Image 1 (cartoon, one colour):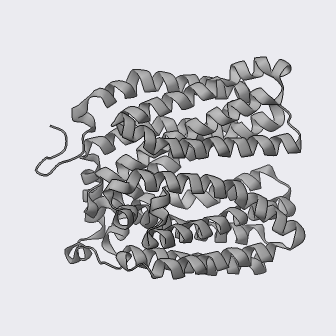
Image 2 (cartoon, one colour; image 1 turned 90 degrees about the vertical axis):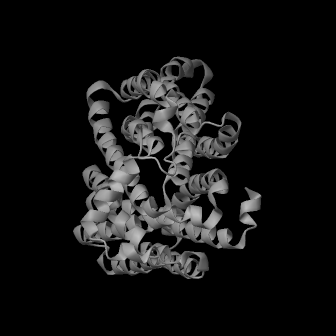
Image 3 (tube, one colour; image 1 turned 135 degrees about the horizontal axis):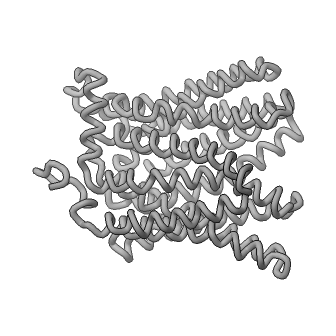
Length: 415
């Protein structure tokens, strides 16, 4: 991993992503604070979160053909500049929640373009053989930023002001754009013939081409139930800590940090396990089972908490963080390794659309099930269901080599 950071090209790419993500994380918590100040409504706060994610879910698959048609540098720099303008435009409208909501959606549109081009550019920057290490470095970095960013944003709100946070976020986009614009490796234009292909034909052939690759079709089979359960878990995890365990502020912060630590551990272990197992598909199934069992372990955690106190809750947070992060390593590795170069943008977009949309469905379902059946019971049952699905449906599919092998030269998908 350290060797990758010694690569000057990758280091600039990595720094641009870190800086941009840090600004995003600060702004995310700031906008939630503003929404709470203006409305004091949990429903509006939930709408802010949905507005941040929705554009990627809606537009993900439709951005793909553009990412395959234009240089990645154009999309990355353009997205950063566009988001910088949108964030600065929020400052005069901090007292208008609905104008802010519209601007949040616009920023989300820019993020949809940025994320597609960013992920699709990874093989070009690092080479196919270093994809697992690049994925691990990105995930561990993301989890660290996810932990630090909101805390830094809250501190800046306390000692400064909301406009200061937004101006800092705008500056991070500018720095990111300058770093990405300097990467000559991203200036290459795709096949000129693709520029004249009709958009809808490009979208249609891209979807068919991606689903013709057995290993990628396997990912979609796995990710539909996994992202549904992850969305449910995301909704009810904080509710479990705050309303069921009734943790005070310092213990709640500790468990959040520990969960992030487990996520970082999962990201770092992923490449090692892929190398040792030689089977990303097998690791994916094992990671899904681990995530399900970690969720189901909430049952014993509740029984043991009166005797063991916070320590058993901390252990549960480590396990769930590990499981929630570990399965993403073989997913990203398989996606970037097996996507044909001319389909990378469309493949990444299609996967983003599936994961984000099913996560949002899971978030909504989590709220309903948490209210109807109880927060803890919904987490435990969802975890056990995920284990059953992984063992009964996904594992047999993964063991079938003909179903998960990459598409090779001269093949037409699965024979």
